[in-house]
Image (cartoon, rainbow over all chains, first blue to last red; front, side):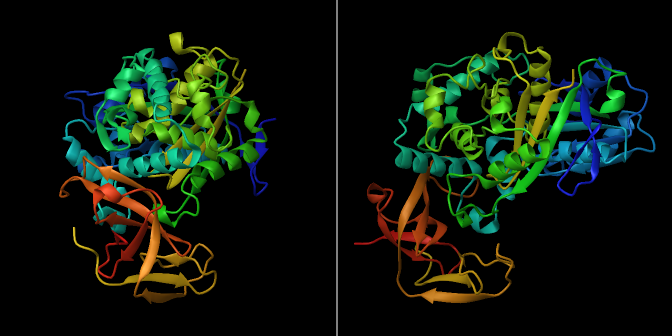
Length: 396
Length: 107
């Protein structure tokens, strides 16, 4: 079947990822956003050569503040030799990548274009940590900002609430960090390629009590790219296209305290449940997940919000290594935001890159041990303000 | 940090009753009409908190910040009492008539 129905019962074409590229994440001295975008795009376009690219969507949170770059999509269209193409930038804070994939997918699925290149990236490490914090603070409500709250401190409040409610031992969060660092140690493009021990984690400095430095993602530079193509023509370019089975977006309250239940991220829950409905598949068919572990606690709360584990139980799965690359449900085999790094606008696209490698069996030593038919990536903006869930399947 | 005024103020949706601070344009239920409620002595309890040791630029650490629950409403604020007494579940008095919310422990 060459098309599916969305909720409105309109016909949509199937869309495939036919190529993908990613820079090394980390401190990329002397490389600006445009250099990083170029590197990721070049890898994708060298892997699979296409004659025309009909559309380009770029994702970045704040190239204006970081490097005084305006219209990054137009700059890239010029560098990539696009002419008479449909080109724009998408921004959804830390979920910019997921939103850009949504936009590109919709253009291809609706028949507006045959192909779309998606590039996400951010250049961050040239600024000191406090300046990064000040830029990122721009995404919370003015009321929240004037109290001094930040996304990392919200994560700390969530961790305390979770520990109080579910009697989770403190070291359980360390298992998430140790696992994601292990994955990062097997990913040559990860920011941190070093495994850590639980002891090193427990000894790391407290930043926002009860969370420590090693609970959080670092500040990174990097970019990732994927090339989307209408499924019918995708097979002319690759015999292993990754099919985007479904994409769905969902928002929660912007001000965090307006939520009825702080331990459920409704944008994550609802975008995922919509994607399952749109794709006509069930939760237990998902065999691998890339999600938004800006802090370790978020990995647990997101898995529970999406219903992969009962509430208050996902930490047990982490301690029993179920979510490790060789476990029953591998989560963040790339190293996640925690170890791979989180160049903000790159993250959602880099998740699609990891899923592509995993579905094609190209992930090297971190290749999931279990069979995967369907994989999920969840790209989240802000503290669960706005999430996009994407379900992928093998096209062969 | 000083407490945020003498009273606690919030905005209640006239259709579904959900309480907000700060004010917004439209409630999640779709209604756009709110009434302002001012309470002389609002006593709530701390749902969760953190101590920020590495705060954003312009703030002096440590910052004691939390979310309190008052009459079915949750609200973010700064804890301004003795740090030793800050625990989940403690009773606090809420003040916000200067736009920032503070939580003071009840004697």
